[in-house]
Length: 282
Image 1 (cartoon, rainbow, N blue to C red):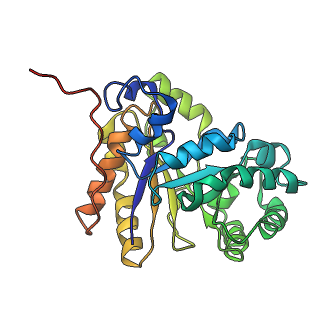
Image 2 (spheres, rainbow, N blue to C red; image 1 turned 180 degrees about the vertical axis):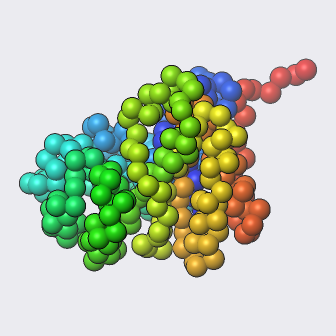
């Protein structure tokens, strides 16, 4: 029973020098982030498959119990739409091998146009994947959220292979009009779907999007704190990723969410963050 929390990236310019030491070479940036959080979304792999040496560096900078949620490349999910992908899957999985146990799950994020009528394609794709890994699927078509029959069908497809459904909760983001450029940009890009917090496996995953105002982000996550406490009580091991439109406070919010859960159920403490600046004599 353990809770993992993280953010959408491990490097972000506003963190440098204030939360994360700066400057740092690439070989140390993930290590600094991992002193704040014990999980991270692997969004960069959506755009290109990294070299094996890069993935080896990621592993070297993190402990074996650190969690990566590694996103499959868009060539697989958005361009090929899960068809004729065997060679691409093999090469991508080979590149990720150095992560070892840190690779918590391969994240299959599907485009909003991927509808209930495409579930047969998803089922065939999932059945063709190696059973030695975990898989997590994120859908964005509204029917999966507001049509109970479509939701049940997706759950059945995922349940047959032990895959998790990853909800991207944007309810707090859309709860009031945007008040900044980052929020307006997020309104244009993020999915607007109903909230979902039903775990299918022993390792549920939630992506939570708040607002640039930390108080609004915190006010919106009460339901999620309750869900995580319940999952932990059931013996599950959840992972929660904290997002805000500008992500300036995402690191501190991730730890605050962890503390909110730890106030209800006992949890191991997170690591002590590395100092952002060297100590001074005076």
